[in-house]
Length: 86
Image 1 (cartoon, rainbow, N blue to C red):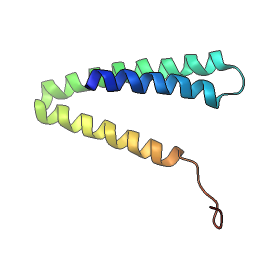
Image 2: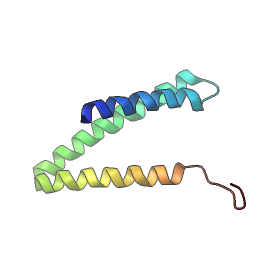
Image 3: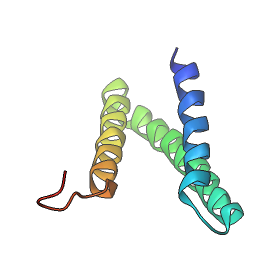
């Protein structure tokens, strides 16, 4: 279920990039994939370091920190509604 969710999310994000970008879609897709793979590599590396230093507590702490950063990014990036509009 986790793998299926991850691949569904990845596909939705890829399609979302093409829907949002109006010009130079190739560059936008390349940027998306670069960030995707670099953040995945960094996450694997940091969790390995956390495992060596603190065991499972470190792994869980880095996972929670990654979720907090993701949530903050989504919160800051969401569109704002103007006051007085529906």
